[in-house]
Amino acid sequence: MHTQLRHRHRPPPDQAWGLRQRFGVDPAPTLPRVMALIHNPFVVFGGVAMERLASALAERGLNTLVVDAAETASAPHELAEVDLAACIEPLAARVWYLAACGLPKRWLDAQGGTGGFVTALAQAAPQIDVLLLHASAADLRRLYIGAMAVPAPLCPLVLAGSTADSLTHAYGAIKLLAQRAAVFAFDLLALVETGTPRADQQAQAVAQRLADCGERFLDLSLRSWAAVDPASDSNDPPTPDLLELLAAQLRPPAQPVQAGAAAPADPANPSSAPGHAPQRRSAPTGV
Image (tube, rainbow, N blue to C red; front, side, top):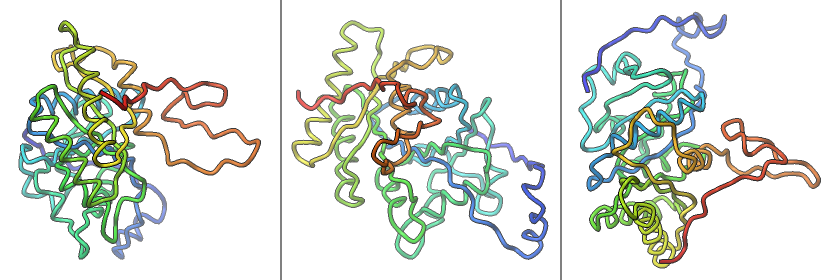
């Protein structure tokens, strides 16, 4: 995807902006919510998965930056390290895109972490609410380590299809994150053609196999999952299962609740309001 360079002219965020620019002082940016989407080379429609996720987030009123840092992504623009903001391309209402193959490693710190890349993206695109980062498990694990590790707990989103190769790769990805980043829960996006006969059973089988293997051999938990049909119309509204998965991804970390006090509602998930029983698709635990 060709990136057109654009220099944005935004109003100053506050009265001290000019002084900070004059003396080279940058305030710590507010970090967006990070969705870590694990690249799977055996899932042909990975781009469709990113498109469906970004569209569903936009329908929820959230600004999303899609950063494709997978091995199959386009190389970043040559000016990415100098002017990252100019390399971010608007795709649709509330959706922006950055080609970033190999780009996160340019923000490696002394501990091998790449959390600084997320900070740089937050500075380059302060309007975004969600950062959808598509990369390999090996690259995503670097977000969890180092001096600038992403603070919010990340529950990675695994891509898988119905083929044995895609399931094997998905299992290897969650195994790597469990062993090297102490990540013991994940969500699943199963790409199957839901309009075909027995499609529901096929999607259920994908989730069951991955959940069973993760729990049996790695003590991992499949938190939630949804099926996406790559052949469906991109203008179709997101399915309830996909919206529930996004609600789980966007739910803030659990906070202690005082006795007798109602849990605060999550603005990204209206169903979390007090008195509203959440409806979540239960993750299967057996074959």
